[in-house]
Image 1: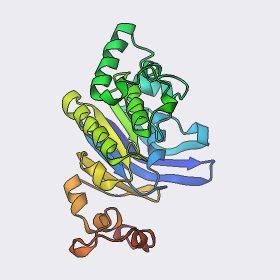
Image 2: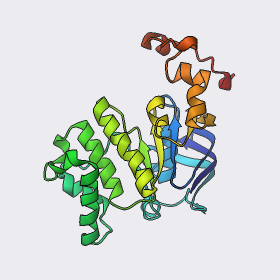
Image 3: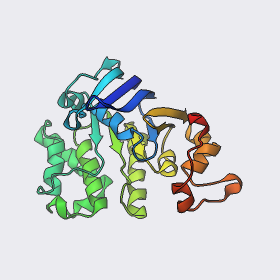
Length: 263
């Protein structure tokens, strides 16, 4: 469904943020794009969605194809109409609008009757926000805002969802609920998902395949089972040393990057 070949992205014609990234996302699959902060994951999503320009970013090489059609030069609204919708990091709701109004914005191009049915499905998926449907979204909790953000994206009945750090800053119970919903969207509706996450264990628990980015390029890709069994992934992303001993956060923050894939 989505194919990226040798993608290169620069910011302000000077800073190379993404270098020769290639990946595939098949229809009806969840693919995780993992990596530390600053690895280039969000830049890949912005390139796919056509929203690099506000930050003086530009695609300088490679091809992004969706359904066999190159989309690297399309404006964002045309990409959305093709069925590819992003949920950005930090939710980015219309804070002064109510929950219901935010959802309606996501389905603005749909007939009123279809929007009502879509909203009912979203409230069924996230019952925690239905009671707040007439509340201004800026006053919701972080978890409720994330549910509204995902719901707003789903209002347009997308074929593929791009999720940027959906677990960021949320309580464990809310994270579990959101990731259960992501899994159901794949299993019950066949929705395709490209999931960007720093939490490797969490992302790989729902993914069908995973890629790891470092310093703007893909350094490893495999099934979740093989990635979770890899010694480098266990040490640098799960904080586990040989023998199953979990490293302290202090050790993780101060390790020297001796990853074999960067040698």
